[in-house]
Length: 360
Image 1 (cartoon, rainbow, N blue to C red):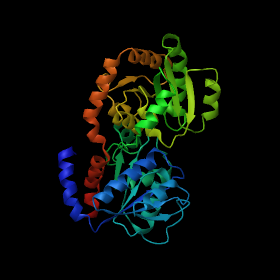
Image 2: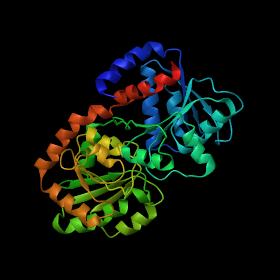
Image 3: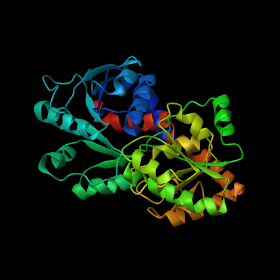
Image 4: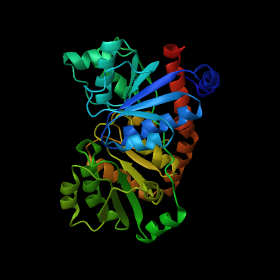
């Protein structure tokens, strides 16, 4: 869909969908990228006048966020539970793996239609139930072409379209950004943010930091996030005075805005929405040519790409970007020109067009 055509459609749907009901399903216990994207979409669809509800985990933070928008929620602690009646919705929209299973069972019991948004590029399980759950969906929305490729390995006939994730527009407080910068006076700040998982490539950032220190002692690395690799990464950085492990930050926007360069060295990745957050804050991006990342970054145009799992290539690119403010500025400018495609408003408009055949 083009931006102009989807925008026109959304204004029509504002009336046509006023009596239609979309039931979102996200059963995650935590609040990570997928949950933030679910929240972004629900918020924008509410602006467009779409009636919505959410089926979620009782302990998940997403519940409180959605209820604060005035949207009704139903809680289930397991995908096998909560199937006592037909959902009062025209279409179910799954946003996580457990949500897919929940909707597939609901479909089996009540023949209710559902669509799936898939945000990861890892292989889909091919056991009977998982395979049928994807095959029985009316449509798969994938955040990148890399995800579409994985879906079609299960069944090339599955109908799939691409709608990317959106940036969230993290809040930024200039005074706090200045305070963060002051804590690293005279430093060129390079940062990586996200859950500390193996596939996110944090170990390659740490290895690159060791190499970069030799030629660029003013470069300092901020590792933002928490997760299973925290202890291992902390141990590997304890002797590196140019790396700070800062843990999870609620005000992540302030830390991203304080950076001179954002790195995203994932080994596999559905899309990489944190890249969009950095771009939205005018921070140049160095990432890997993995998964859906090339959907966001055209190498040498709006960012730099290197091969994944290669600390040497990563550190070399860091050094070149440290030495070239003109190149960094060019990436920021080019990214800004492309960002409308990834705004929450635009992404919601594309979903409106996806919903339309199932609710008219």
